[in-house]
Length: 154
Image (cartoon, rainbow, N blue to C red; front, side, top):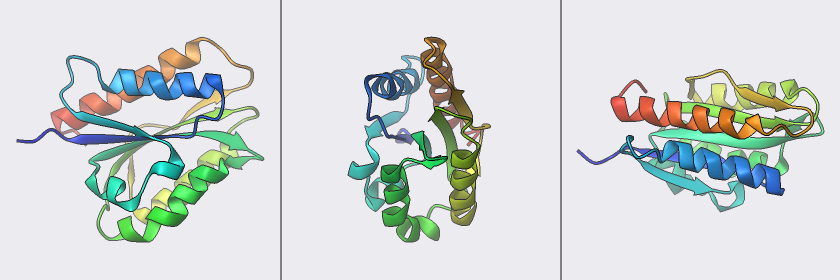
């Protein structure tokens, strides 16, 4: 049976958010987990990538109490091609939030509810000033999603 695919879509405009994207990729690629892991930026993600995915991890920044514009652009381009074909798709999210992240989370919930994607974990909101343990939290989120995908939980 072919390995399942986890698509990580990470908006990473700064060195710290690039670290988060990389640890998400590394966590999902744990040597004991046998899945395909693809890391893409929102602007490089196409509908065909979503259609080929068995689960998605979205990483975005909070911009003006909303998701990053490039993350929204990803949804604008991929929403309708995925709408009828990817219902029930497993999803996890991390948000790098300077404030509280609730507006970003709410917007993501609204869009993904419309897509009928399944949130398999509560959104991970990384609030305030940078903290080194953010990387461990994102790595654990990605590893948990990947392990659940591999074992067929999602």
